[in-house]
Image (cartoon, rainbow, N blue to C red; front, top):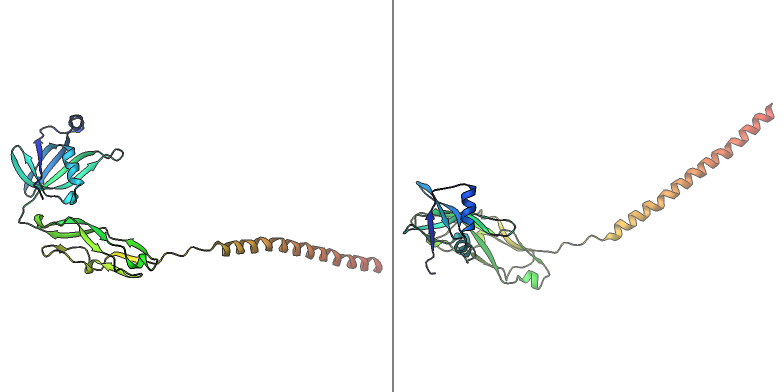
Length: 233
């Protein structure tokens, strides 16, 4: 992979107004961090940083930050994007020691179509899309590729099933499921609910009818009692 160099200029002024002026000049503010080093305010081209983020290794890309003619091997620490237009607003960098391991998050990429989907009618459920790894800066993998073509219905791939490069250590828990093939969820039949609703509706007039009949019977039963009282008089 060709060496990537991003030009950076030191900043002596900070604040919202200064940052706005930088952006109108086609630059964005940033900060360079390093172990046991004082943070340095810098300005860089957002186009170069965006190009790095869109590369295969993305935010895990190692590159040189050329600050006043002095190159420092860095990695993107954090970045801020405008939510509507998606424009890069700010970028932070971390200077690396190439002989010290670091913790990074690497994307998982699935390869192939599972037999459980193609033949058995299952659905592929991609559960864990990032893995936490530990390695030297030069050994950071661009991605972790998982071949799922032989995955059957009801089967899964856990973190412990993955093969990593020799110099890379897995930090994600081994029992975590990365991907599995599940049976499609059966749709609930609306017929049962409709029948229940019809039965409830049909029951209401029947109760009213019985109530009226009972009242009518009571009214009829009252008449003989009144007649008997008249005869006694």
